[in-house]
Image (cartoon, rainbow, N blue to C red; front, top):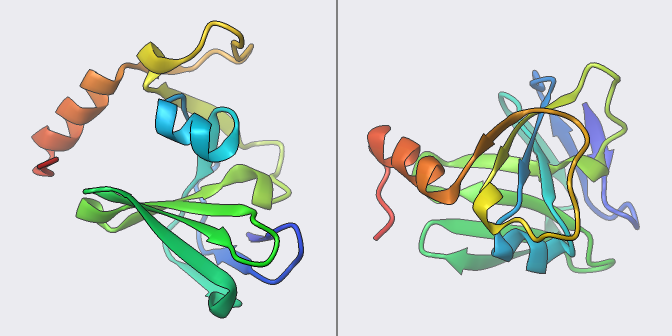
Length: 138
């Protein structure tokens, strides 16, 4: 699956994409992109135009990347698991891609709701799942 930033300076190819979208409502994602973050995943990826990518360390456990030319947000990188979640809007997603879960729903503002039904998890639930998997948030 191939996608790109607004100006085309950065392109991303995801190998073996999972046909699902995770939506994060946390305050940090909303500040980063102006609304909920919709992320797609896959097994393996390549980035072309790496010289146009700026990475920002947004917390002790995460980095966020954007195109330094047009400002398009590119990915969220969860450092403990070395996993990347790419902005769904970078790609023309096939119809089978659906929202599978919404996380940090306890931080979702009152002014929007998503019509599609999916699993809903609070921030505490997500952190507990990560800690149970052996990741720490110190």
